[in-house]
Image (cartoon, rainbow, N blue to C red; front, top):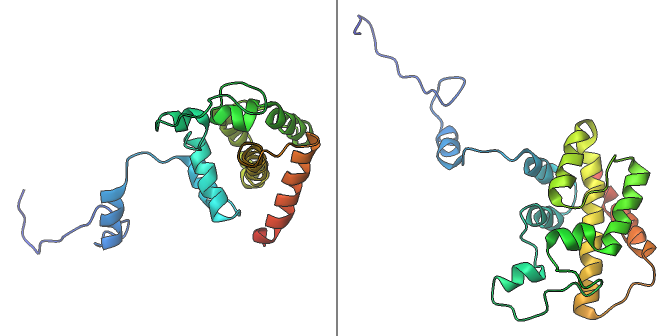
Length: 182
């Protein structure tokens, strides 16, 4: 339909209807799905390497025996602590040392459930949406303490004297990271 008057160009990717390279770039690189949990992870006030570790854990990319076997690694696929098949969820949730910490956190924070996988952890986080960032901060400390303890056992043959050691490691990490919250 043609009409009298001047033609006008409208850019539909911006609310102000003006062209910007930023809006074009955003449209071209947008994958179509936003992962709300990962968006919160990137906002979490923890060191960048911990944010990257959380992304890797939530996407099953940490170097567990199962993941390493996919890359032709010849080592044992069993957990050094308990003998179960070592995958991301086992290392971070179901191995006895990790399970001990999650039971402690469940009772301390009244989570309503003890997570046994990253999917269950995500559900617990989503139920706490009014305190998402503070609970994620604590969970990040717990996951990192578990990972570092596991690596010390596997790579350095260190044995933890007591399961409560992992609670103390978590508290120490959170105390150290507390300055990032300011």
